Image (cartoon, rainbow, N blue to C red; front, side):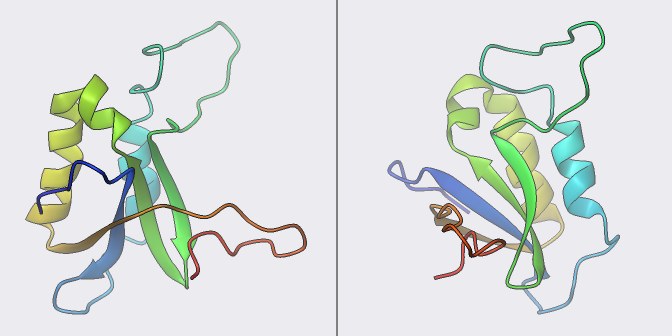
Length: 115
């Protein structure tokens, strides 16, 4: 999928183009874990720090579907990492869409991305 220049985020959904749920069930966490080193300011491995996801590649659930939200800043900062994520989606025939996740509203936990 070609991503438009104005897109800020790409949503890789855990649903194949054929409509099947993608397996394994922890695919989103695995993909985001691999991408955790790619972040603003570069890889950070401070002594005693916990492993965390990159803000450029975050796993979540939207409308009951596992999704990885990939920020397009990754494309600018680390083109090879961007290509890896996009090729993962293509190779596994995952549905990909553009958009912008909305923050949760107070009192409405878990609604990010629901429109």
